[in-house]
Length: 399
Image (cartoon, one colour):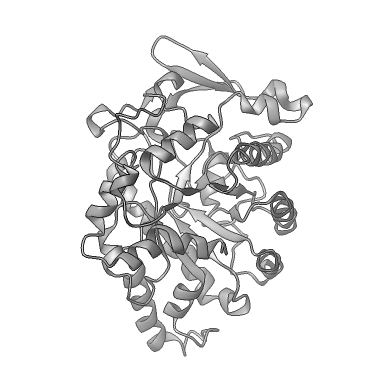
């Protein structure tokens, strides 16, 4: 089903009494012909193209071809109807602005933070950098169709601090409020990483994960000039399931990988807390996106108790409980996470945000209202409004 269908879905405005919904993590991938339009003229001939074959559509790029993987666009299908490779025509059209807004209306979503795109998985440095700018230009043009509803996340490479600062300044000037960074810095050659995924190009994996074993690490003092720029600009850092990328499309590994990909997001958060980055830059904010939040309060308590005993011999540079920084500087989004909802009042659980994950395979679309009512059963209306709307607005410093 490629268009919004009024018969499809349970989110009826007249049945909803819990206020507006600000989806903290939805997705927008551009159509493949976008690259030929937005890349510089001399790079347009090198853009990926779609080739229809008997079994599926294939993405042809830099001498290689791979089938269109449908895992990122299962909206409108039930689990028993999921398929991993197919044709673009079988996917929901998420990039037509009017159809996308119609789907938001259908699902009762008022506003949304939008992730997606990012760089091409190329081994050519010029094309790699140009693809960051091309995506940012396209997605901001796309969001201009409803700027009060659509809040896209900008993307930046993270292999050189000064290079990243220039990208951050450009994104801020364009109007982005968030910048996506990998969970760990990248290598100088960004398409090289120890985090390899069979069905994804290394350059695309690296843009999310970076290299946990690389020479460049966020705890290094040289990064303070980047944190200062981000703080001064009021830009939010987002990490999006970058601690560990699931092996998408591999039946043997997918199910055990998925929860580990979420729990792995604790590592970059801990690096920021325990290396005093939030202490030096109290206005800096991180969004741990699609990580789930049921582990936030457990993590905060564990870190507090461990820090109390181990802070002296480790010569810890912080003098406040780790949970303090969780509540001041770290936000997290979830899809279906009743445990996190019930732990919302514990240290570490303050800044949690609901999301639909549209149009990915975990999406609550088109039944978001019904799922929210189920998962928030017994929760006071004010707390629901904070989690499904107000906390995302606070993250972005929106009135």
